[in-house]
Image 1 (cartoon, rainbow, N blue to C red):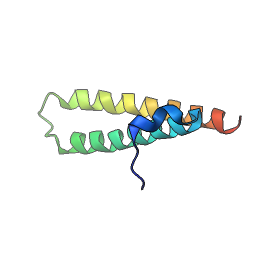
Image 2: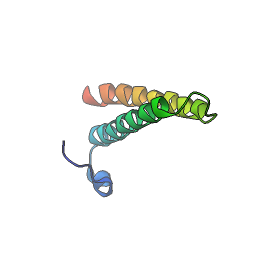
Image 3: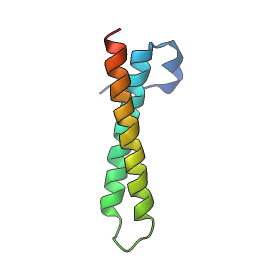
Length: 73
């Protein structure tokens, strides 16, 4: 997979920008899932990790909708 350079985001189309954000959110979700499953059940911060996972999932769903709209334009 090619490396994403954030400083080149301004000269990309909306579709490509959305793809970059989607990929960053997907990677963040992977990291959060790993953190969640590695955290012992008695640690109180586990609920905050779960909330973050849900927010990232919402962002991914929004990106999917935006990708569908911009692809069809």
